[in-house]
Image 1 (tube, helix red, strand yellow):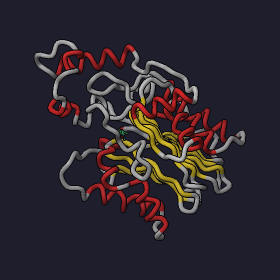
Image 2 (cartoon, helix red, strand yellow; image 1 turned 120 degrees about the vertical axis):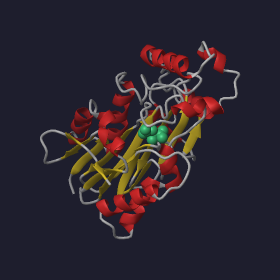
Image 3 (tube, helix red, strand yellow; image 1 turned 45 degrees about the horizontal axis):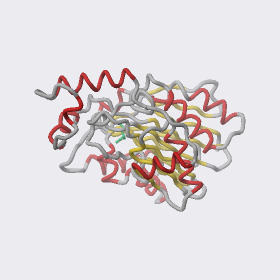
Length: 309
Ligand code: ASP
């Protein structure tokens, strides 16, 4: 077993720092948190943290989760508004509360209570894109404010397209001594119905890790991985004897077997306890974004594409 980090493309500016932290002996959970914080701060990443995309009402509702593979303790926040680092709030949920997931006002109240850094997470660029989206897609709506009192369901459908900004940052980390951790953070589905949660804060759907078998994280269509408990499924298939590749293929097949509902790309990132990793996707759309990987014997992290199955 060696130290390793498997992250997705959104982490390409963060992975070198994460590698340094892991190499210097910081814990897997620290590496997950610090790596994700870096992405949450990066305004160029239009699907995570500051610079991410708002919901249909222009609100920045952010989701994040973290999981400890040794205890299977988790912490998650959903639809958190007004804080710079959802991942850090999620970690404090794990440590400070007898709960696993806080959403909306309760999550914000807790973030405030622990003194989490406050920030308006809607960047000027993201606001511009949002205003443009409203103008281009909704005839007769001249300003975003005019949506506030409307029934929003019909306005949600135009964003149900694979080319609309979606994305998450996910990290899987192994310390080379048997400890695994995982985490995710996202602004979710751009221009979604307010209150929509994807899979990133749903443990078992977007994130799962267990020191005994391995871990998995998912990106893209959270609506599908919630229906299949995909991250947990990968780990369960490994528990039942599948290799990391076989387990990922089984979980991907479960996604491909889904009928009706919103169907789109999903990328599965998985590691086992022998430092093997595998990344695959159900659609070529999902392969457009490479993933980032580093293992102790590599001088630099690499970026490479998922396998399309
Ligand atoms: N999986 C995320 C969600 O459903 C978004 C993404 O990764 O594209 O919110």
